[in-house]
Length: 193
Ligand SMILES: Nc1nc2c(ncn2[C@@H]2O[C@H](COP(=O)(O)OP(=O)(O)OP(=O)(O)O)[C@@H](O)[C@H]2O)c(=O)[nH]1
Ligand SMILES: [Mg+2]
Image (tube, rainbow, N blue to C red):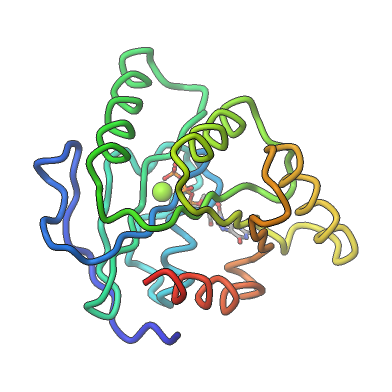
């Protein structure tokens, strides 16, 4: 698939703000600062579409991007960054619950993990939740440019295992810097839209 058109449509904090049309949605989940917004920019080849920051917690609302007029990529707020109040954490949980329970067009989840790190307790909880809800999932292991070539695949497979996913869950190491893995991710996205 080639992404010819990508545009920001809307932001939302609850279901009243979600797009109302029936186009399929593919959502990015993952720890804060792992690279979800960068991945949206990398896949669409638009550097300024989604806001990226080295400061964790940049995306605190749900952002919807319409791709080729055909489907949405959904940038969900990241979890697990330290400097956050309890109230903020609760707000995050409510927002995610609302999205996952009411977004009936959700077809597929891309769970983004940093290839350099083993999964955290938060990551494991997210993986549990995905399995419980039986949503098709793909693991995208970010920042592969930061790891030596021979370590990339073994580390990606190890993360999948630690998260408790079976071999049926695709795991794709990628980098928005070298563009490794981006075409493969696009093919998977294509098969779900
Ligand atoms: N080297 C490298 N850096 C990356 C890659 N992807 C993202 N980054 C960097 O990681 C940082 C965080 O990226 P974001 O895309 O803002 O992360 P996020 O997951 O959207 O974070 P939140 O919005 O806080 O949930 C930025 O400094 C990016 O430039 C990658 O593939 N390689
Ligand atoms: Mg973000």
